[in-house]
Image (cartoon, helix red, strand yellow):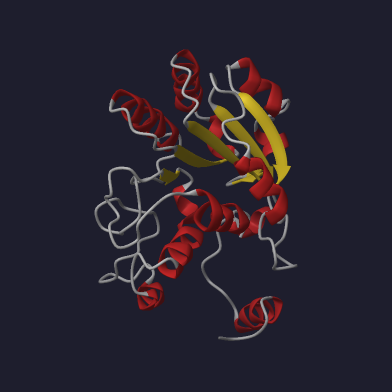
Length: 241
């Protein structure tokens, strides 16, 4: 729920792609490195015509196409198999470098979780991106301040986060990750510097739109729902479909 607007703006207004030709070489690449947020990606890929929306009803079914983490080669529109946190950004750096070597103007966007960037591989990749001045690369952090075991500030404080990305050679800004107009304006400015990769820190709310789940770490992993909870969720999003 925290990354819906981020993905919505990317796929509505920013990314260059062909839903009927997912492997089109000149497309922009968007990697959802925080693979556990895949439901948001699946909903938008279906909406854009990458696959039949009926597949959404088979999420995590044994014989379904859509698993609990996105799989490249199985789900049209998915650029990388993710979920092992810290892997998506290094892959994105490689894609951005390949685009330059092949003289393509494709851009690469990598959406990461805040807890995910505890991983050292993220910062190794950041150093590489800075070294190669990959202005066609954009790191996006879904900064909802909650990771699997609790609040990021209590587990491994990320602040000062903007300064960290800048210290690693990125042009970095922050934005309200639920403000569609602000997101559009930020993405329209890319690259922020012609000789630097970009980092966009999106301040978001875990469980956005479901009042009793918002900013509640207990809802990071929650699979067994009681009927009253389901009814409250449906009410929060405008009723059953």
